[in-house]
Length: 377
Image (cartoon, rainbow, N blue to C red; front, side):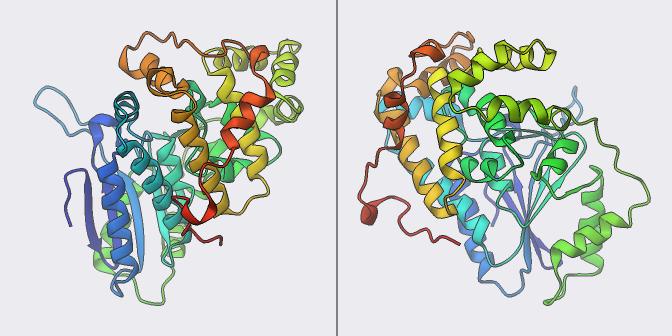
């Protein structure tokens, strides 16, 4: 199988998937989601494939430019979302249903899936990676769930994996959407092992010489090879770990209004920077995100995906077309690029509990929910 935006190859018993849309930082289109789902299901039934590795691609070198850096995946195709929402294109529903089903498949696949995360790994890229059996990060990885910046919420099971991080860091990462580096990812539980960027070609080459055996644990094979590397992995200094006390103090409060007020009372540089980041985000969707993460903390995986599918429908149906908070957020960031979203409500103080609860109201009876067939693990 060799689609233009998804490249696949079986090397020494390992199925290797390369996300191949480098000009868009490998952001996921509906076609890519469908190709990924198809190949994973095929390999799940193929006795010659013992595991799967997901990686990103780099912009190729040109006559006047060197090759670009590798990025795993910047998320979903937000330009498509904007166009589909403004035109009433039902493909928007298909995208979210099929993306969430794909992410659930990765979480539950009988064969191990490995994510090799380099560069930008955000939104939908995190959705792919966080369901993997082994999550490898390289020193330059930039991880984030920045959806509140575009009037959305951290979907793709963001509620599930963020809510299971230590303390209240999940609330902080979901509401504020800061970038997390490799050291923080390892410390917080968003990654399992670090590797130098050039370790992947060495591992792939080793598979050609010594293919995986049927009974071999591919994750242990990767860990063992990385442990043998004579050159150490040099990681950046963590940026989140050292602020855990402040994160728990502020983001453990019951409402976003209380969190905002508490941050304003904190004179630290960290609190000031956090407020500056929040200033560009949708007040409504920050409140919705806080509620999402706290509800998700006790929910099984499939139920959390179903909740998110309901939430994302509300993002485009409570206010349709250009009036949607998400459509407006994407317009300001990626379409007009004026960086001036007209949020409604415009401030945290104007968000009411009733506005938040609307996003969690059931739309479909259980027996016709688009993700009704997902099983809790």
